[in-house]
Length: 298
Image 1 (cartoon, rainbow, N blue to C red):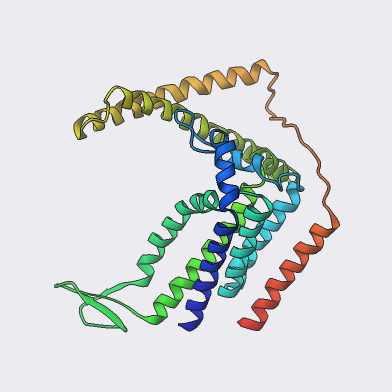
Image 2: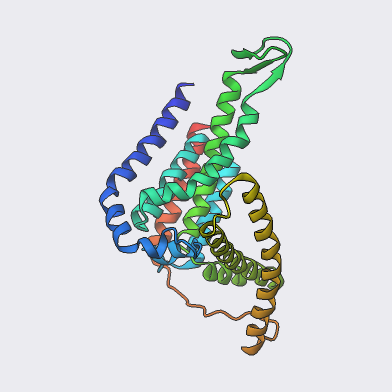
């Protein structure tokens, strides 16, 4: 139990350090870039804004994707809480310090997956029984809700592992644009159909989000959410209109692609970026360190 407390303390200290270090930068960033990467009323938002604003965007895309995927595999395969904590801190360092993304923005992006992680692991931490069991239990009148130190330890380790894996992927997505990730998948000989579907679906998600945001703002300006009954009616109207608009936009974008000589292949502007030797050496050292840390702490 002491190790769990130490791990959580290390993580909280790292988060507080990043937040304190970049408090001024975050204030300056909000003043100068609020409308570019912040929430934009009526326009939706895209995670690509963060990728294009990242200071490590000029790094080789293949290098970043490979490092992220390899780190993800190590987090899952090694299954070590110390490794998970190191990965969380390292990925936060790359994204916040090297990429110069504000700590507040980084934590706000991670808030959604953290909420899903906590809800998903909550069911693992507790169990039900007719008799009192475990070190900690609560009588609800018809059954006991109980847990134990072993279950809590398992849940904390699982949270760290999942959060470390998500941090590795977030480092990639917050510093690499979707077109560059698709370019790496092409180089990895992923089937063309899968790559093109990924690109179209990804782009179309934000198009529909933009349309939905505008429709919602329009409904709010006309008191479409003044009470529960009106809100239900407005929601149903927006949902039905979204289907019609999505079909119209699909036809319009397909016509636009054909007007630009679309023949079945989506061609993107691909830029080759050199990988520096120091980056490869640092990444190799980091991977070796994770393996050694697993060897000495398992």
